Length: 404
Image (cartoon, rainbow, N blue to C red; front, top):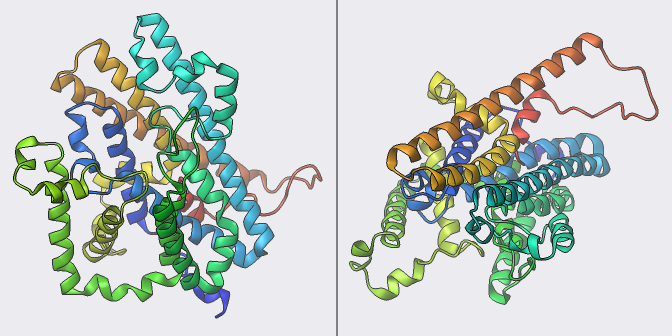
């Protein structure tokens, strides 16, 4: 097959931005760790949640953007563009790590709240600061809620050869991803964490969602299009989503738990998020299929004004995600030091989402100004110390990259 035939024509899919923005908002609410705000997150109503959706969309957009770069400029050029994105994500994680650790240390000393150190896994920093920071740079040490970006760094860093092969034999690579997933679960493969344990998001299993997104973007969606229109799949999907919601709620509501046989309940609780349990993968697959069925790419409602904040947050996903993680910690601290009542929690949740949205609009405006200034001044005079070509993605592609 010709490589070019694997790449669809560039077309803006607002569904990706909308869902990524929604996932950002709901993950923030879930990370605040309060009884009220947690009920607004995905995790209480099904086996998969915002993290699963994020990894899938990241693989999809990465294949679209960097696959085109690799086709047009070759493997080396595409790889350099991918590694530049990996570096951006890595720097974002390190900056977030530093601010996170400094804030926990400052608030612990200033407000006499020693429980923050243990809750947010900052104790290793106090016991062995140099070693802990070194392990943080190596992505082995991660405070609470800082697990997602290291996973993206690893998946994106390993993506160049995978993408090059997918552009030629995408079905074989998809099969290899499935086999790696099965083998990792069977033999317990994972990466070590510091000071002990393993990665919360096992890269050997979570790669399946990333590769699935890439496979669909490079033509796999056409192969599975019949599932979107199948009435049998619709009935099964709706039933499975209902079952997943009830089973997840049973883990939170003791009275509901008693309605199910013990063996059935324990098969799905606790939810195996670390190794991406098969029922969790199936749940996201059903969500994707039904989403494609009921929300087509040309749906007029996608451009409605009410969705613009979500779309904007999805377009500036890396910045919004990092800010959301930090605000979740600040929100938790504010609630513990003031009031954890329903009104206070709703105010904290609203304030956090408002700040995240403001950051998204600011970044969008800032990039637009930089682009306009570059267009007015024209290309810079050639300088051997500065790269000339291929430094900026096409406008449609830049917005598609997001956190990918």
